Length: 207
Image (cartoon, rainbow, N blue to C red; front, side, top):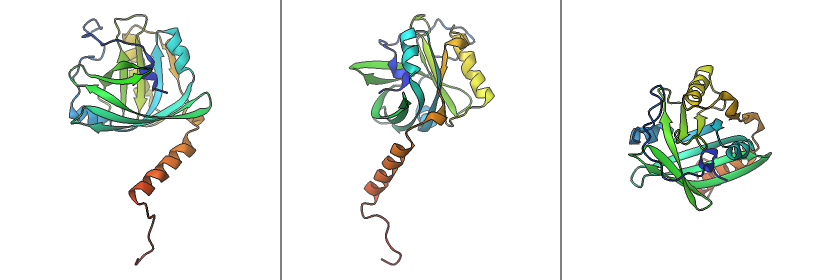
């Protein structure tokens, strides 16, 4: 199961020059510093989609968090995602492609490549992914933070971007981290990774 941002069926993104001047610049190139900023653990907070089909799909998400690991030389990011969908934990591991000049990240789902425009703010603890605002039927915006609960100011920034793109707050779908069902699987994966690093397990002192 892909992250909510990858559910939009999009073709290659054109240069975006029709947005309101109050919107975040959608064509900022991705740098190594950008990748450093979004590497690590992130929580899916909310999303707004104009498409009723996509809105229905993301409504099935009760919570989601993921890890991103950057590979500068290959322009890829490893993503490990834990999602709670319809009260069931779903784990997914995949690679995202980085289009530096376009400022986009992309991933494959159901045989198609889907693109999201990376939006970084002055607050390094949040980021957003946008879908072409000139496509009034399929535009969308997703919101991520490094903690499961965001501050009023962080939420305000998301709401402002939703409004700027021409959507309404009523189109926003939120998740609830308290409904997470992936704790046991996450713990199991952590233990497995520790064993891979030290297959003999902990050693007694002096041996």
